[in-house]
Image 1 (cartoon, one colour):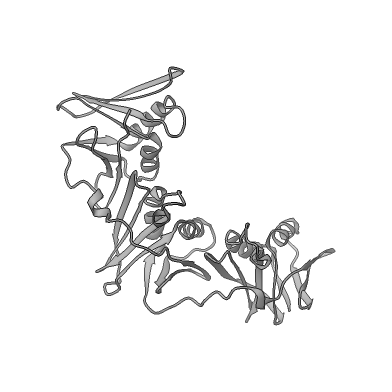
Image 2 (cartoon, rainbow, N blue to C red):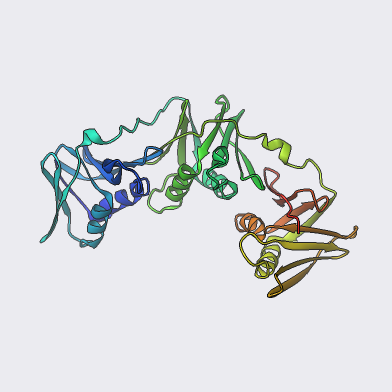
Length: 369
């Protein structure tokens, strides 16, 4: 193999695939990045057998070839090179690669391409096109509610449903739930799959990164895999096998109390009260009275914080406690300047939804204090 490329292109490709490199695997090849020539392009790929990422970058291919090299060493070395000098990569033997830039040289011992797991091609059939902005918005506004408890494997991802031209995303950890729906052009495809959180985070990271500049992303689901195509980058992931809980049962169909508030005011109030709630698992109490909403947090007598906001409310007094982090996660990911806070009793879940968007909501279970 013999190629010439710029540092900017090579580093961009490394950074795209590097997060899929396995850090714990007993298979040495999974700590490597696959480098393989294409016609006037270089393919970089990495996988931990759960999620795989590959991308194409611009390069001048003098001689065809392929090799896998240690990801961290390769990445760290390329970062040190001059931004202005071109990089020459050559392989003289099956497992030996030389990287040159000006007077600087590095030799890396790798493993043959044959040892690297095969990442399937992006399945173009049965794929749906979604606006990048829309998909990013759906991920940001739901994925924070996914469970991180490995014993609840079925909840360690985002439930993605495509039905009659509507795309839905749902995530829950059993104590909170986030839901969002948006219309898509694809009307025939029906899909209901659980996408692992790691794959969702990869898609979010790539959609937020600069330089991929694409308005449309392709999503393709097969029997046990999901693939996302963003420009010249493909992310492939296994699906979580199992049945997602009936989320519709969890969403309250009505609310006795419905208050409209400024998102920023409720966010600031919750942040203040959370300072008094102590550790991450602490609770804050919301007290709703005529014309006002109070939030208070206290931690074993060491600290106590209280705040109050005027609200348009004339009903009976209500006290309800929530995990403040759950409330903050919702409010930090809402774009709307106004939100609805929907409550029923101190034992029933609360709902926060943006004013003017009835296709997004978050359900939060109350805490006993």
